[in-house]
Amino acid sequence: MSSFVVVGAGPVGRETARLLGEDGHDVVLTSRSVGSNALRNVRAVQADATDASELSRVCRGADAIFMCAMAAYHRWPTDFFPIVDGTVRAAETVGAKLIVLGNLYGYGENADSPLRSGLPLDPTSRKGTARTIMWQRALRADVPAIEVRSSDYLGQGAISYFSLVALPSIIEGKPTAFIGNLDAAHAWAFTKDVARTLVAASRYTGEWGRAFHVPSQYASPRQLIWKAAAMLRREVSEIRSYSTAEMEALGMHELIEMSYLFERPLLVDSSDAETLLGVKASSLEEMIADTLRDHL
Image (cartoon, rainbow, N blue to C red; front, top):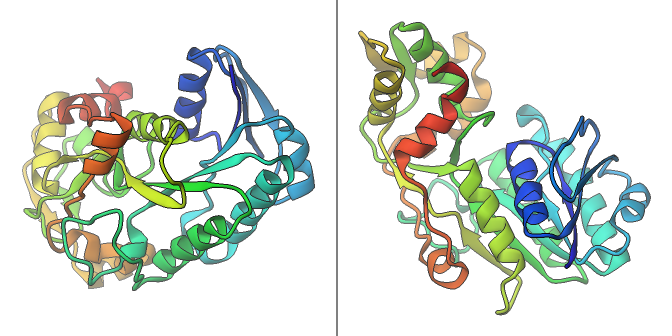
């Protein structure tokens, strides 16, 4: 049995803690507002990851720390760095390995698709720059580090462009709008698959200081909207794409910056994770059903 700390109690963090606990490990799930917990072998401990001393006390004896915490989306360039710095210092203090939950933003707009985990990071956005710097700081730590990079989430409780922009209209059976090219293939990652990849990465016996991509399924925004509507038995009379002017008028400034992700096909090479970690993507239908669980 090993001891683990999961920093961040969102859908991925909780599922990661659950998987570790079900495997018989001693797990601490921590965040500033961790809330109640009934997971097997998992203790919920309230702590602030930006306070390295406080987090170090929570992590004492840990074999590995999973950095799954999330900053407010519009404050990534300011609020994420103290979180990752506190987590890195805690890992160094207790001598724990570090597994960082990341995403694809760091590759930038000019990266060729499919994205490979060995591609150099070349961010073209503020958020991509923030994510790149976070990984660089983890990589410079005095403990081994791995980053697990995920595409856009599907899954219960997941906060994503799909859940924020399209899903409310689908549920209400109203005309639905999304961003970018509605017919461009896009990689979608299931929150439970993300957690499985994190847990598998923590057991990786090869050389650390590298990244893995979460195995994903593909659907264009239009296909995803149709499939979700059909599962909900809703009629979607219209599907269209927001213009930049509309997004500006609606205050979707954060989406404008990252809309390039949906302008052309976004494909992800996850063969390393599949071969070396043994993780496979769940079916798209399972991902959608879990996303809609509260509405079915």
